[in-house]
Amino acid sequence: MNNHNTATKPIIYWAYIEHDQWKFYLAATPEGLCYIGSQGQPYDEMEVWLHARRPGNTIIHDEHQLQPYIEEMIQYLSGERQQFTIRHDFQGTSFQIQVWQALLQIPYGATWSYSDIAQHIGRPAAVRAVGAAIGANPFLITIPCHRVIGKSGALTGYRGGLNMKTTLLDLEKRKEVL
Image (cartoon, rainbow, N blue to C red):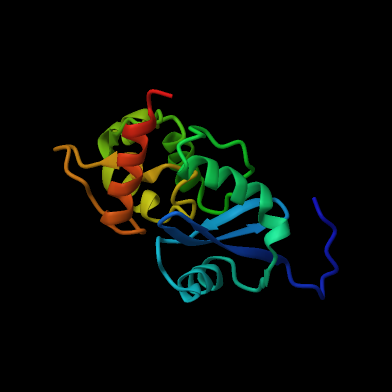
């Protein structure tokens, strides 16, 4: 735990990733990754998200601080990485964090339904709450909510947009035989 002077605001570092067709923002605290932005969205998306969910932080551009996150993200987007080893700074309700941890159990290249997630966490009747927790996931790629689909097999909502979700699922389908 860092000893911050009470007069000093906690810091969130951010960087912009541009790799092939990918363009999005990342943010991390000293404890770990705290945000991944939507494909092609402006800085404002990240700023609004961080101010709403982590108020009182100072947001500083620092690619050096984000280097481990950027490296793993580019490896994933290049099809060279199927699992992330980076730290996450989880901030949410205990239920949200339980759902986000369940998302980590979905194998690379596979999909689960919202019902599957609810069953996995032992709350089979909580499908809508699971959907809300997934919608609040700040880690669009590293906590793989893109791998969650409707019970019918249809693609459903995704903070990054259905285009981004489809592209990530296609990436994993092409590379799952590595």
